[in-house]
Length: 182
Image 1: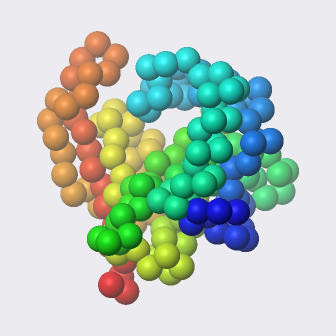
Image 2 (image 1 turned 180 degrees about the horizontal axis):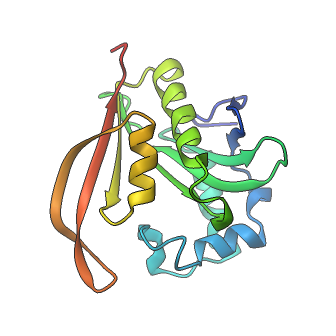
């Protein structure tokens, strides 16, 4: 694998995180990216997504040294349930952002996001020696905010009424976590 994607796997109790590959771009994946409920707090929601456009994104991400783009896979079933991205990585300041989507709605609220975040945070700090990670949210995205807080992030900033969402203005919430080892 190229870029900064781990050569092996990141393994948790219930999950394995591995590089997203073209064969992951299934009908289910395309459906996630076009599902208004799944993407309601994602900036990708403004345009329709085709298999071809997602494949192009996956190929770009696979060769981008400033991003680690991983599939979230259930360990027992081998089922691809979402994606998590670490990037863009700023190698000078040793910072990056974390973003994720759990595409399988039946699995929301079961701790898969928190486990994925914890695995990526550990990798970012222990292997990549990053200093700080951040994540941004629309304030109504309480499930994602809760997952990041459980994984050790803290609220660092809030920009009031920054995004237009579902007929009204909502806050932009920023969370962050510092590497305890520097």
